[in-house]
Length: 278
Image (cartoon, rainbow, N blue to C red; front, side, top):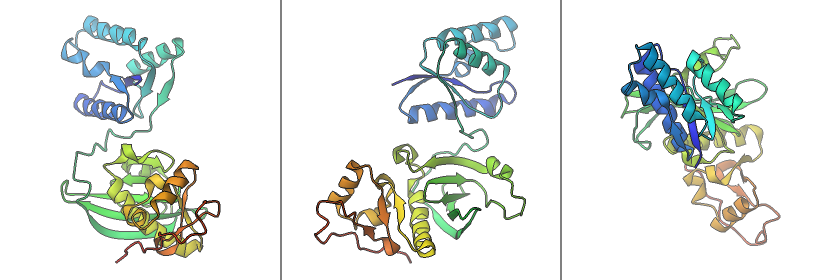
């Protein structure tokens, strides 16, 4: 377990920035690390409006920074205090990780990840023949709309009905404002458990559309297989794919293609079941 020093803005909208820092710390814990975040500690003890005490808090934070393993920088704005922390980390030759965690505006409270309603589906080209499946979900627990977008490499969650280039602007500016989470299928799905039911639902739709559009299998790491496909597959074959570092190749109707290198390929295997579309 590494000790991560969390650098994020504090001055300005203190309430909002405090929630941002808390969410950043949760992100660190979800990665399996411990954290130290000075502005969640010292303002509760020191007077932030007293210049001497504020400086004392900064100095103590920098003293503890030296004992940490890495500095993680959160947020689009680099404050004066963060700049000091970054420069000191460079002096210590400490790894500095700039996190693309846009949680200032998009802090999502806890909710039942299986309690959702599918409102709409769309499959289209975002440019360069990059096809993306998108599902609009309504979360009754939050009374909120979220969009989940998947291609064959990654998934993202957004908080508004924004699809790139529908306004013909060819700009990603709006997308950055509504992005909640973005992750690659090369990552472990464990840290994204809150989103998995909706991601799996979107993957099923994307696989259905993509295998029909491209007329070839959809490649996906075994760890990300939706349960509807996984339960119809040969468990031993899936274990073999993972041990070999290979993806599952999925054909139309959720059929998993058996790799010719699989030792039991001469036998009839399961994995021919449909994905259960309505």
